[in-house]
Length: 239
Image 1: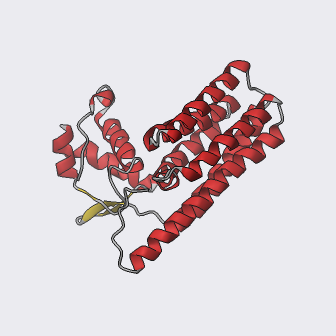
Image 2: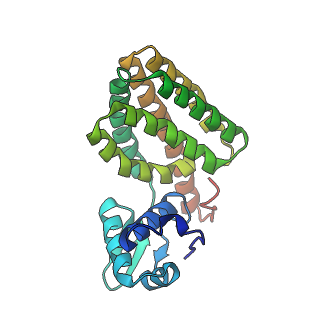
Image 3: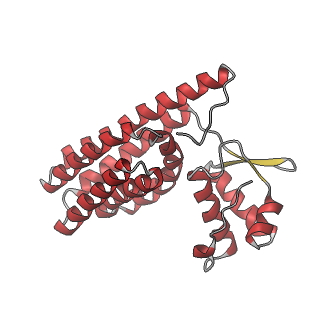
């Protein structure tokens, strides 16, 4: 089980929360792949904690849908499928489109400037074919809109959804980065709608942005599933 060495940034939180954040990050960024086995004793030893906070974190991850636990047997990272995409993307699209509609009446010039900066950095990361950096700027862009809406329910519900979506985004932000380039233009349309205070248009643009990404992910997942059925051994980390 691969365990990254840089763990210092979470040292100040509780052991359980520390383990939870590490595992969420490793699962969502692809360090721990779908179907990968998690050994609690090995993980506890590597992190330097007892098994109790590890088990507590794994129980929370099971509730969130990131791992599957079989008591007395094994714990594995949950898989990814087209069904996951069809459940996650429309739900997040609906919530974030509502956030955009509410944000249109609250947006400030400072936030608009930040959104433009984030989108420029996003475009630069795509040109550099830096998938991790592109993901980070894309997340900042969408998170800023949700935060501007100032609706704690939307914020809370989208947090876990975003973590699941991040796993699927590694398919969307594939090695070619071509589909992601369309998002730059879609982000500009969202910014324009927010700048005009047009909540209806902003909501429509945000929804389109997420649902188009879903179609790309669905296509890539279908290709992988078909390759698997043909007996291929495609690299899951490639996309």
